[in-house]
Amino acid sequence: MEVSGKRAMELLERIGFTRVAGSPEELRAAEILKAECEAMGVPAQLESFEIEDADIETATLEILEPYRQAYPVTGYKCAKNTYQGGLEADFLYVENGNEVDLNGAAGKIVLVNGFLRLPLFRQLMKAGVAGIVTMEGDLRDNREETDLSTRKLRRTLRAFGNVPMVNTRVLDAFDMVKRGASKARIVLKNETVERTSHNVVAAITGTEKPEEIISLGAHYDSVDFSKGVYDNGAGSVINMEVLRWFRENPPKRTVKFMWYGSEEIGLEGSWAYVKAHTEELKDHRLMINVDVGGPVLGREGIAVTGAEDLVHYLRYATQVRGFSAEVKQQIYSSDSIPFADSGVPAVNFTRFGAPGAAYIHNRFDTLSFLSPQALEKTARSVLAFSQDMANAAAFPVKREIPENMVKEVEKYLYKKELAEAEENN
Image (tube, rainbow, N blue to C red):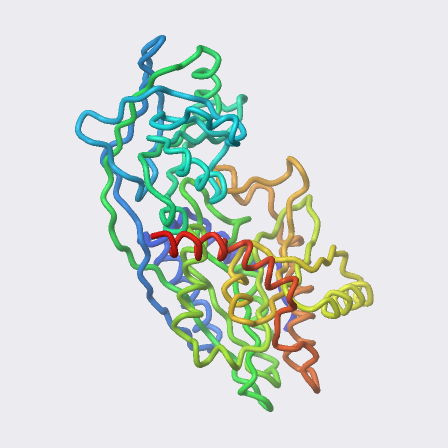
């Protein structure tokens, strides 16, 4: 049996609905994937885990001086609530968020470019800001055709502090700065809650070396408003095609398939799997991850979080087989990270859309720019590599992460900064 882009697209259509972390829709997608496994005779399980979320009751932003105007915003989940009546303070646009910008920012509501990563948030907390406004989108946005996402202040950032935070559109941030906004009021009220998310797990037991495990992963959740077919229903259905092939052609080594929930809010599903399977993890030889795929106009990429010789192998193998792909040694911001952090080498397969030919994390991530042919192209590359690894006479990849990649993973996870924060708290 060959992989089929047409069959993959049909499954993608079935899970092509918004399915955010911990929602009934996410569970519905998990059940569809589980049923697909079982329909081909492969038992599958749903493994539940708890995630942190929040219900937002109120989130507003109003400029008070030198003019009065309220702007549409969403509140940050798990950010600090304001007191009754809200937080009223001077308003400051901090641009780069460096020492010059933050001079005199203490006690003010600050507007920053884009959304927050830990280094900037850490600087804002050290500067003593009272509230934060982030922005998204661009000046060409049409309000009726764009959505304003709800973000979460993750635990990683909260280790350094917590203040009221809201998110607005770039076009509204532009208006505030152009009109010289100097005083503002934020009102935020939200309540932290726990929700249940799920991983879908299936396996084909190896015929000769069942104790050695190759795992294939893809996340199946989406963000608000998005159908999430490019990111990452595509990876989910590609891996289903690989599972179908191994069902018909049993491998020498055990091949496990995991569809992870809640990736979009911090790789929660893969972290949950790694933590729940610590004993089993020592038998994992390699993790293969597929994240984003299917665009008609695009390019194939392979990111190796492992030894340099695996990069060379993949470069040779793709050329021998006629697969066009850019192969690099690097980390990839997806479910391979928890495995690499646990010492399991990882290979990430992607098909990124050409500039202007694909949309991610918004309402335009739909089937309109994807094709069965593009899905099949990536699926064939993933399958060929998986066959090599699962059926190798002697496993060629050392179960270790080279020092340069260890440092990159630690940098991605902000381990040094978090250790310092823990010491100071």
